[in-house]
Image 1 (cartoon, rainbow, N blue to C red):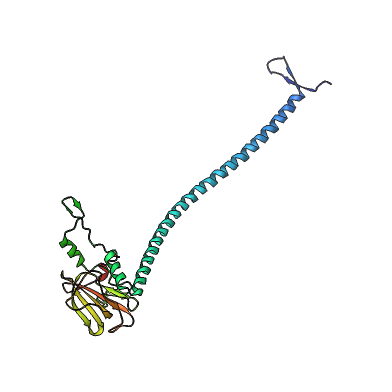
Image 2: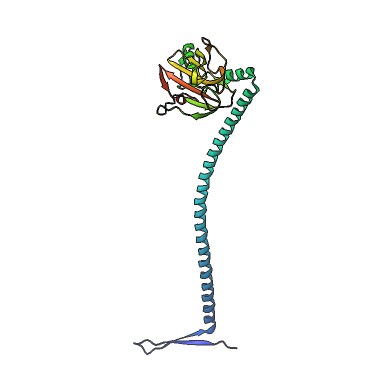
Length: 266
């Protein structure tokens, strides 16, 4: 069976010669198939490119989100570290209060001698004598011990120092019977009842500083006695003019009232 052909004639304007070409119908079939295949491939390519574009857009969003998550994770880690520090502090306070509740004077004195409530001086001391780094002469140790800069009681500050409101001290709320500590070494100038302040102790630190402790339940020292920083000198009470158990604590320097909170080493 003979195949079909198409004849194409080309007639130039300036020539009488006519050019003829015979093309089999099979060629047209091949061209149609080729075009169909080309269109199909082009469609698939366009679809794939669209998919790749969506993937790239999604990747960029994921990259931005991942950066945000990394930043949030760093913030969470910082918060967790702070919470860990608070838990450790809470555990130490609970252990400390547990020791006080036992009323074991040996344990209390041992605790105070061991860390003095982790006392560190308010100013950095860096002395180097004969190559011994950090060695502090005895005179300097005595000077630092006489600075009233440790908490006098484990409690909550219920009223702050305020010259405007004429409250020239700091009040600490704490359970009645909890111990009160000397905030610095010195000599007891007064130990007894004092009108509205109730049972009061006044310590002269022999450097211009004087600290006082009022509304005590018990007084555990006497006038003229020397006390060391961290010694138990009394207990929380409600003597004098007070609405609840607390310690009224003051510091003066050369007779001028100072804010005790500026001295504390928490």
